[in-house]
Length: 198
Image 1 (spheres, one colour):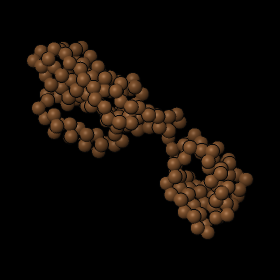
Image 2 (image 1 turned 45 degrees about the vertical axis):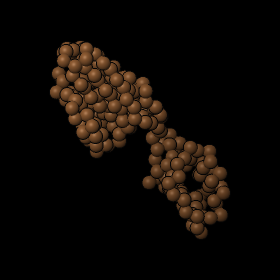
Image 3 (image 1 turned 180 degrees about the vertical axis):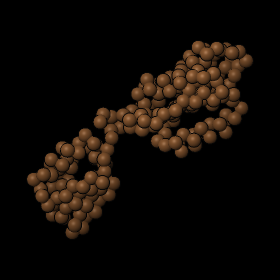
Image 4 (image 1 turned 90 degrees about the horizontal axis):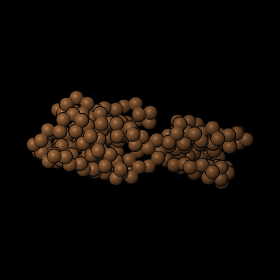
């Protein structure tokens, strides 16, 4: 599976139109709980705003998403926000746009443009990083094989979760999914070293 794009940090964007102010807040999220928490924080902080419209995308395959208009005309707020998250090809991302009404109605097309532009401004200011899907692997080996195992593993981009060096040693690590077969192949000649996918 290819890399997917996520926000590295929170960011903000602003758009003003006919006295109305649209403040966009982009936030990394990884669960529905994160979504609820972030929305509650903003609703408390900006309790005097007329609308708190939002959208989010969660999951490596972008499988969980939602758009919410929060009282604005149907599809005039949440969908343009969601459209921008998708256009930046982001996942595990939420954007909330807080609107302060300026007294002049903007019409549906004006609202779509305002929510889209505020979101785009927030995402343009964000630091985005690529993340690769990983799988957990456990390697078991005897102590005298330690230097061989470490030498073979040095060729890969790994994240070590646990290392135990005793008479019988083990390592738990995260390996890029795309590297699993190659990693297993390196250890085929060494039948006394065991690789288990967790």
